[in-house]
Length: 471
Ligand code: F0G
Image 1 (spheres, rainbow, N blue to C red):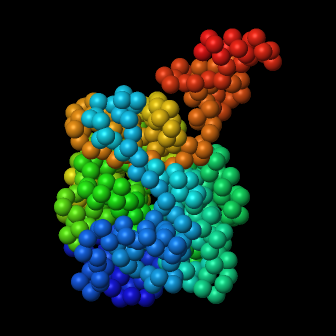
Image 2: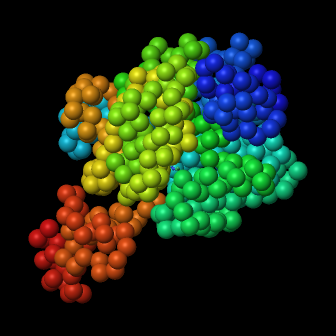
């Protein structure tokens, strides 16, 4: 393995380093999270980001076709013959009509990075391609994760297509919380053949359990506590920059769950800036769901910050203790981000510091309305992604984001991941509401602004024509 890549503790004052030959997710010496770090001085880094755009001309080469490995000089931890790819990251930065969304931004200033176009339908594939590469380098056959759904779908897909260097198929093992996963995502894990364990508990419990199981059984852990996952997810930002002709936007807005994505974005910009490849760093807004707003509470209410790498661990510990005492669990319609104990909290604090970032939270109703609005513009997404736009609206309304600023919202997952929520929303306007209980019926019970219910008509041409003409 190249010695120019190593693991490094993120805590200032510790900074312990480790080689890549053992799986490691935390610092042996102080317990903090690890970064993948590089000795950039000894590496060949392209002189300008334009270099990567030229890769498109050689897209018949699988690594150049990948929207992640196309940027491999910026994540140089693996030799090219070890890189796993299934063509992830063919996603687009799309400009949207702000008037259709009724957003008071200047024309042309809003872009959506639609990560639902990945092979498993979410941004997770960006990270999974990198984590599977590392699993292969470490000689791991069994790989596992806890998941609110998308990580498991992505892991299951990559496991079904990847073999070890000895030619043995990898085995995917996923832990999901009982009743906590959208069906679109569960169906993927099952179809791709992963061993799927439904644990009686929420995501936080599943993650704690898989970390123990990984220790005991030697599974390679694929959650975003795995620093290589985040290396791959940096590529989302490289593609955003590419879509804007390498001119950084003013704002990046993304939903926050386990905080892997926001952490990866922060690291991407920190490195690009250090390498002199971008003139300035955009600001970051991380959007929590109000029912799963640990980051929002810790940062805005308790004043937790990165503090030059000496963040205060006790604030989060007290917060979690208090949550446990009150038996409080994360609860939101956006199940993807229904997480109370985000594992990447310190790295997200660093991202907020590097990107002069902010955090806010939005209600489930705001998430649902925004998801429906963006759906009307042809960009279907799952509820968690709606949080990006709901956050944008709130930040414009409260004057944080100015009307002339250039904004990129990340749509993290595909519309078809959670059809129950979408159908429930639109059925709220139906003459006959769904009778059965469950998520769709609960959502349908309230009036929803953008509902578009199916119109029931008898099998009669006159009635059908009347329905069409009266619409
Ligand atoms: N959006 C979607 C669609 C997600 O699936 C997730 C996380 C997030 C946003 C939040 O991203 O964790 O990096 O802050 N889903 C994980 C999972 C936790 O298990 O699929 P984050």
